[in-house]
Structures are given as structure tokens and as C-alpha cells.
Length: 418
Image (cartoon, rainbow, N blue to C red; front, side, top):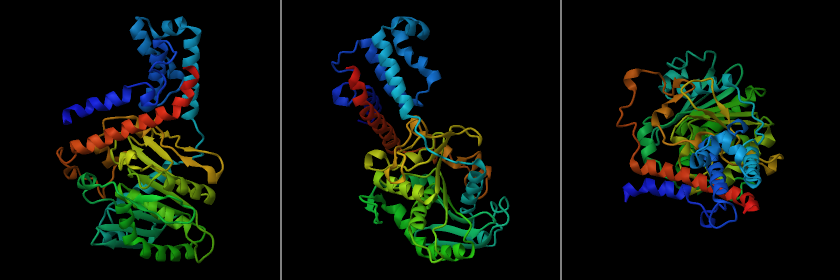
């Protein structure tokens, strides 16, 4: 049964016709060559998106079948074929180029990553700001560490000249945490958050620190009312940072106005369902807050829990597709113009565009390791860095589910040509 699974993935992905939600095939009036092009373009979204300069790449399936170059094939196409290709290309370009209004800056992301790394250090060293990762970010004071020994959660808060800082620690054993991750929802009750659900384990983890953090945040905001609040975390810490941002942006403050929230997460898993992500987006938009979900190459964690279990990332994804810290893609993952009407939709051309996954990418962000201190001897063994076949299957099915969603979105548009 297990050996058949990969074949079923590709069978599901590349089957066309009304039963699969794509009208490029299955008895339509298009010529078979048009269907090849149509479905090639549809599949292209999941393999990196479609850009105008790359259009000829998607003529290659037909050129291989006919024995011509893509350029010759393009010149020889019938007017109807040209119409199909051009229309579908324009549709896909428009879908992948929605305005996201992002103001992502590498400098703030680097600071946020340093604070996320510091959260993995010893609590006492964090409080006196002498930890291994603290030296790179001098000048942070009023540091308090919050922890829960029973659940193994830890976070710290403090203040710099530019921000009030909130940083959540991820799991201390990341490979084991990924293997043990479950996919259960729990209701999330907030005004105007109709139908919202979040991951129950992430909510429990955040709740173990929430009350102390809220009390101290009130003190810091009262003393520094003009400073924005920078919230960050890596892995599980990123999930808790998401929930903290939702909490701290939606509660009234004794000092008056809600401070500006800047959320930067690294390799965070999906936290809630689409209703929660849409609500958080509208909340951040109306409050003038910012959120950035930074992903790295083939990191598996952003693909968990899977979309087919009802989870959906909120924006705004910033995808680094290599091991460095300079080349990244600002992803298109929000729609709508007015804040209450904004909605989220993960960009299939960013981290969702590639398989297979690679667990070491979860341990490296912006060219740096994500632990308190980077020591070569601490690198997990190859055995620990391998996901179980079951979990790899879950991520592969998550990928297939996304391709099916893309086809469902595009099928009414394809119907024009059937």
C-alpha cells in the first residue's frame, strides 16, 4: 500500500476532466493540443508560478510532442490555440500578482531573528542579557523571562530604543516536536471572529504564558507609549507569536490606544483555519499593524498542519529560496482592498511550490542557525533529520490538495474555452 502512495499523488495531480475539477480535458471541445497547453499552464502555478518572460517554457510539452522548438510551436499554433494560451496566461499572471502592500525590511527581520534565537538560551542568561545571542543585540533592558516548566514553554519580554520586544521559544527538540505534532482544532472566541478555530496545542502553549505576558506588556506600553511591539518566534515559537499578536492587537490597553504590532515569524506552522487568518488580517489591516511569515526553501514546518485538515496560513509570506539572506520573494497571499473585506490565500508560487521537503532548512534562517548558539557539534544526526514516511506523505498530500484548489479556482475561467 505504501509503495503505491506516490503514484496516487501524481495520478491525482495530473488527472484531468470534470471529475477532477479541470475542464481542460474530459470531453471538451478543445483540441488535444490545446488541452496539453491548458493543463500545462494550470500545473505551472504549483511549480513556481507564471511570469510573462517564462511563457515559452510552458509550450514545451507541446513542442516535445510535435518535434519543434517552443518558438516554432508558438508561431505555428492555430488562432484558437493562441487564444487559449494567451487568456490562461493572463489569468494566472493576474492571480499571482495581487497587491500585498508589504513593507518588509531585512534589517527588522534580522533583529527579529536574533531575538528569536535568544529565546532558546538559558532563562537566567536572558534576564541579565548575557546569553550567547544577546551580544549581537545590545541595549535591550527591562528583560523578564516567562516560562512554564510543565509544558516546557518559554518567552521573554523587554525594551530597546526602537521596540518593545516579545520573543517566544520554539521546541527544544524540534525533530521530535515535528513528529509528535497533531492536527486538532479548538474554537477561538473573539468578537467578529465567526467560525474561527486554532490548533489546540498551540493555544494551550500560549495560554501557559499569556496572563503574565499581558500584565507586563501593559507596564511596558504604559512606560513607552510611542514604541511599537515587535513579536517574534521560530517554529513552535512562531505559532505562539501569532496567537500573541492576535491577543495583543485585539485587547484594550489601560494606557489608551493599542500600540503598533510588528509580527515576524520564522518557519512557523499553520495556526488556525481560514476564518481565523482572515480575521487576523482584517484586524492588522485596520489597526495599521504588520505581519511577516518568513519561510526558507524546503522547510517542512510551514506545510503543517495540512490545509486539507482545515488549516490556512495568514499573510504575509516572505520566502527565501536559498541558504543566504539577500534573495527573497515577497509573496502574493492576500486579496481584497478594504480591511474588513480582505482575505488570505496562500501563494502557490512561494514555499508551497516545491517538493520534496528538507528538514535542515528549518534550522537555518537568513543564513544563520536558529538555536541560541551555533556549534557544529550540535547538528542533529541524519537519522533525526529524516521525517517519517507517514509525515512525508501528509506533506505530499498537502501539496496535492493545493493543486486541486488551484484547479477549482481556475475551472470556471477554463470553461470559457470548452
